[in-house]
Image 1 (cartoon, one colour):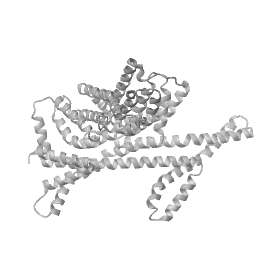
Image 2 (cartoon, helix red, strand yellow; image 1 turned 45 degrees about the vertical axis):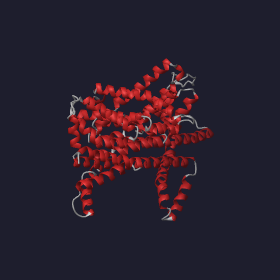
Image 3 (tube, one colour; image 1 turned 180 degrees about the horizontal axis):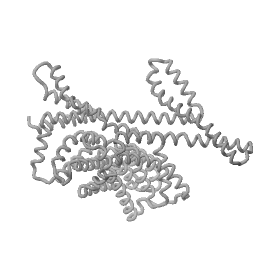
Image 4 (cartoon, helix red, strand yellow; image 1 turned 45 degrees about the horizontal axis):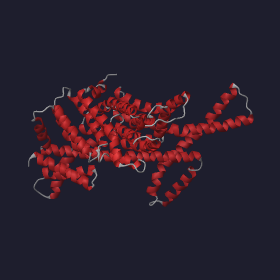
Amino acid sequence: MEWYWILLALLGSILILMFIGFPVGIAFVIVCTVTAYLIYGRFGSFDANLQASVFQLTDNAFSNLSIFAIVPIPMFLLMGELFFHTGLANRMFNAVELLMGRVPARLSYVTIAGGTALATLSGSSMGSTALLGTLMVPEMTKRGYKKSMSIGPILGTGGLAMLIPPSALAVLLGTIAEIDIGKLLIAGIVPGVVLALMYTVMIFVRVTINPDLAPAYDVDFVPYRTRLILLVRDILPMVSIIAMVIGLIMGGIATPSEAAAYGSVGVLILAVIFNYIPPLVETIRARFEARRRAAAIAASDDAGVGYWLALTLHLLPRLVFALLAGLVLAVTSPLRFLLRPVTPAFGRFTDALHDHLHEGTLFERNAVFARGIWKSLWGAGRVTIIALMILLGSSLFANVLAASGASDALIKWVTSFDVSGYVMLLMMFGILLLLGMFMDQLAMMLLTVPIFFPVIETLNFGLPLDVTQIWFGVIMLLAMEISFTTPPFGLLLFVMQGVAPKGTKFSEICLAAIPFMACAMLLVALIIIFPGIATWLPWVKF
């Protein structure tokens, strides 16, 4: 059978299973297993043939699931989940809103600034879009903002999570393509910042030409001292986490896996601090102040030292006990539902324990914090399992392509055309945009990475091979970002429809996304013309 019929049968079977409703990873595993049986099968019993084909197919596939390079995927996912579920995202976004002042189209700029920060810290396009859509669109609609100025910026910044680290999708792309993950992560920083600036300039120009797009309104003046406190307390700690992750990778101090783990721990520490320290300090300080006033303690140095010493001794045991109680809630919450049918006594015990721990404001805070931790672990674990299935399917797909000879024949066929490498690059970019109209980014990566990267490596763009791989990886991430908002099936379009105010038409959401898609396409053109936009920073020596 000719190689193109093999490739067409593979891709067609996978697409049919996906449209039927099979998960992406399962569809790839089923099709690749059947294909391996047909390729590796020998005369004899069915069981022997199947065993031989599965052994040949999985010989290298499972080794890709145990490599150190994929550790950033669950760590970055956990980092983003913790950021959303522990209240840090709302805290930072509210601070950005207050800092913005009275500039025209204020809320659109707030969305760009806050959305970029949220996407960077969370690494979740859908989470960032859902949060911003819930917080900002109703307020902007009430203020008379047009849909293109309220919904558009949210859709635009949602895709930045794929570019600016931490990006689990970039790690997955680097793992499948077998390129340097650290350099790919760093390569997305400059394009991501440039794209956010392009969004800002576009909003400024549009509002200057037509002020009715974002009517001006009065806002309360925020004192500069309050702004400084908000900046130092609610923004800089969050930004310092991402700066630490990027700095560790760029400085060669830690691998992407280690930097991702440090980032997750950093977000968890911030969550503990913001959830427990301020309310505990305020409560205990109020009690001591009441005691001091009642006792009319003289304001002396000795008394001040004694006060703070007593405050510390009073605070530490309660803080430790609060954290332990939160840990108990986090551990026993899932266990009591899992073990209740088996051991009813354990269920009764944990119910009583939870009732006891929930007494009082402090323990209510513990319960909320524990639920946030559990949701974060559950969300990160669920997506990690999907990512591992994606990696397994990708490895199986690459093995089948190699065994059938389709990959080598495809490369020879492509390189036989007397066309520029840039023409081939634009064709690949168009295919990615077309696929983005009908499938999600994970499925696109599985279908295209095993085919596109070997082809790109044979083309001449005047760059070293390792630089070409990173450069094309950034372009591919941008293509997937654009496809996130490509009508009619862009994933972020449906997320926005789910959180937009009642009465918002799907056509309005699609039209609002077009100017921001145009900015992203302009950036792709700039990166193709000036590759240094994406390739300069990863090779900077510190």
